[in-house]
Image 1: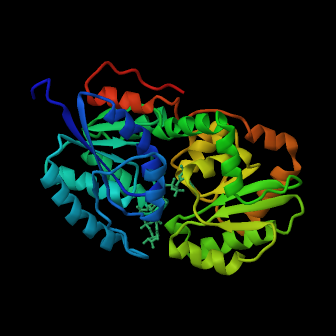
Image 2: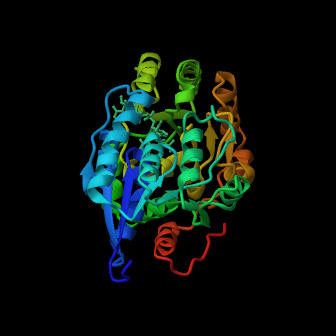
Image 3: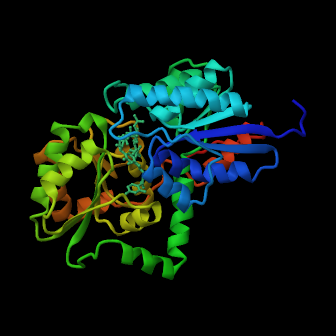
Length: 383
Ligand code: UD1
Ligand code: UDP
């Protein structure tokens, strides 16, 4: 290709976490004269995606609007295949970028592969080695790596996972772009007292006499019994006189149904709508402990020095578990209640969890990815 012709890079994403983690990369791609950056929002999520795009001021060139309420994985995949194939035919990109392990990312990668368009996988190489946890994400991320020629691994561990699979593409250790997004957001919040006042006014009024337990949950493998146990644990924890719980409830009806039914109206437990990223980061800053099954929160909280209890049996993000700031607690009611209680009562233990550290990135992941795409000299991330 003529060196003066910009490389046409099409970023495709569709859910809240993908948008948060791709937002700083989209900005970095748009700032490069050597890149013609195009953005497609698939709309796998509707409101939760729009929230992120508005906040980061990203205008998608194409919106596919594929979400339907309580969508099935096959229904979603078939709508995505049809729409993304047409998008690729219309835009003819030189490269497609996808992020992580969602259905959007998996279908976009396969659709590009079918048209022989090179695929770059941002956040490559995360593995639990168990196809059922997280489900279906472990399959999605493995499939994407098989068809990617550039794999942007966030950590050394994820690089090792990829090398063990003898894949064909090139692996580059970049750090996770979530740390770029988090650092940008924290700098905005910390540097702007008026913004902090506005955010605090939008969030539930916190009782200074009680410690904040911040909760999120949405994993498909926890639907049913898992969520029932989680709700019972939260109902029990809400009875403690040293705790207040804030839980922004995911819009998935399989989450909202049981959560609203079991937990509405409890004192010291605030069920609220999904927060925008500024509001959520502000709340993480104020949390004493975070209880979650989210992937992104497991990466952000250590950077903020916040202890995380993960309501899963395995994680593809083992670095902070090894460092002792994240602990897996599964979804058993008794175990969740007991672990939170122990962190409340044992100050030294809480302190050992509440250490700021950054195994997942240094805030320069996006620049490294841009450098790799443009074939510039590459300096890997080292934790
Ligand atoms: C998806 C991803 C998961 C990711 C999560 C982040 C897959 C298979 N799952 O799970 O990897 O961790 O997003 O949150 O890709 N809904 C709305 N409005 C929204 C978003 C969701 O109403 O803005 C409801 C709809 O009824 C929708 C349902 O939630 O059908 C499920 O959304 P979907 O994206 O299929 O799954 P998530 O559980 O959100
Ligand atoms: N998040 C947010 N608002 C919320 C809850 C979470 O902005 O109410 C952010 C959070 O900081 C993280 C991302 O959303 O960056 C995680 O998304 P989610 O838990 O939906 O998906 P996962 O990370 O598990 O794929």
